[in-house]
Image (cartoon, rainbow, N blue to C red):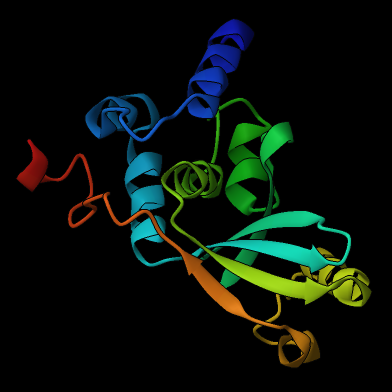
Length: 164
């Protein structure tokens, strides 16, 4: 993929709004968009908020693990990113698309964590255990708060037969 095309596509992903036509996104991102929509439908996007610093880390669960997303860098630590995005065979992975959709639609889970847990969580993501479901940190989290925009109807994934 040409570098300019790649930048234009990433810019389009950054500019997703609530009124963006999902079928257009499906055409641009193909099967990755459908997979991202499924992750969103399963409420797999999480925003970790550290207190009292206010630091935020995005993660998306998929394929049995939780993947850290750096939205402003367009980075995910999944295999698809390493083997396809970095090798220029894809612009983004499904986790980055899911994170952007979740943020735009306000459809994610907020997990509040004490600043003291930052190092343990980062170590978990780096070691491949990713996230807190399987770690002692889970017991030290304050709350899981779903953030949803009730006006969005997401009963079926765009690009499926029902939508065409």
